Image (cartoon, rainbow, N blue to C red):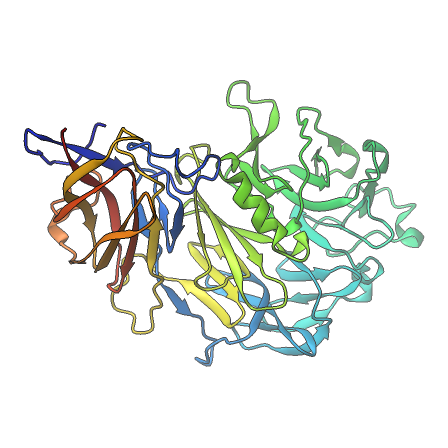
Amino acid sequence: MTSHFRVSPPPNERAAAYEGFMGLDTSRSDTTQDTGSNQILCTLSGGTCDEYGQIVRDPGYIKATKAAGDAINDFISHVAFFNVGEFCWAYRTDAGIGFDSIRDHRIDPVWPSNARIASTYFNGTTVFVARALPAYTYNGYIWNAATHESRLANYNPSFITTVQNRAIIAGIPLKATELHFSATNQLRFYHDETDKTDNSVTRPGYIDIQNLISRSETITGIAPFEQTRLAVFTEERMILYNTDPDLNKWSIDSTANIHVGCLSHNTIQPAGTDLYFCSRTGVHSVQRSRENGILVFASAMSSRIKRLYKELVASVDDPQDISAVWDQDAGRYHIFFPQPGSPFSRRLTMTINPFDHRSTPKWSLTSFLNERCGDAFGGDIVFGTGAGIYREADEDDTTTADLLLAPLTFSTPWLWHGDVVGKKPTSRFLMQAKGRGLINVRAFNDQDQLIWSTSIQSEYNEDDGPPPNTPLSEQYDRAFETEYRGVRFEFEIVGGRGRFVFSGFAVYVKRG
């Protein structure tokens, strides 16, 4: 195996190096994933693999507080930004779901506790909707039930989004295939008695997709795509509409032929020029062809973790409980899987190059905060949990007193060093890392018996410079005198603050 490590083993030894980490992969057995370069991991929690193949510890988290300085301790069902650095949310109690904001504008529960919530920001207000329930709006100062003039109460939709200066709603009881859109720049929806004879191009209206689909499908999600298009998802497909300020110019975009359905509206996230969403079988990206700039197609993003993804989907009561958030600055798509009957939740994270959204995705899985939902805006990302809202801190934050830092843990598959049969005597273990923290390493042989462990205190060195542009000076070398056919390693990094980067490790194997 080739290695970027600056190590020179003795003449009678060779270095088996592992680097260029690719994150989780469940597509093959963990006995067949020894790749050395572009090395796969079996577990990865509390960190992600960046575009350079390094394992990077997650930034810390800070408990969010209201304007009065009180910590937010609610059981959070949904959270949405309404301004830079400011957000509102739906909280859940035994009495039902109520609403609150960081400005401390709170109302008592008004919805049942099992409501599944969607939101959008339109015309200066945040609009919260839930199926068969009256919508609520928040303008930064007061919560209001949807007024009679808006006619939202006539529809009580499941989903809402915004495109081309109109609010779009769907998932309407008894109208499962209808899309209704508001008047231009007004939260006012179609009404038979007053709008049927209105010829204005800015009037509200609706579309029924029932005869565009071949089965008894229903709308499962809606979202804007690019600047002027509306993506409409069912259980089996996506239909793309060209929208226009002139209602009469709306049309189906025939360049899109996508036969992949969406399982939850709240997983649909615009990401640059693409659109991410979750289907029954995995995470997909809706994107326009780079070759001709015309064709719109869906690309599977989660093929490497298909089995893990299906297991996570099966672990929730209802797929509509699954939600996601796109962190544009870090290039991370976080998917939340709340576990039934408890505050526990698991977060699956897809990491891609933030400068190339079509690069190979890398995956990690954590349950540290038990995040249930999230939102991102203006470089700020917040997570809703069963115990309040947390902001993600800057990765270089080393001063905040109440910073909550997840331990970084990861493990390898079985490593054979090029020979799956013979026993390999070893002499040294080396690794490269940068940042503060205690690194605990454990090795298990092919009988899964613990054969070696060590702890290394890593200290940050500002002279190292940012990897990978300069070589890391911190190289950790330990005696590793043992023998095995195969080995797997478990790593745990605890304590310390600020950015922590793990670049790779190597084993000196004695030649026969």
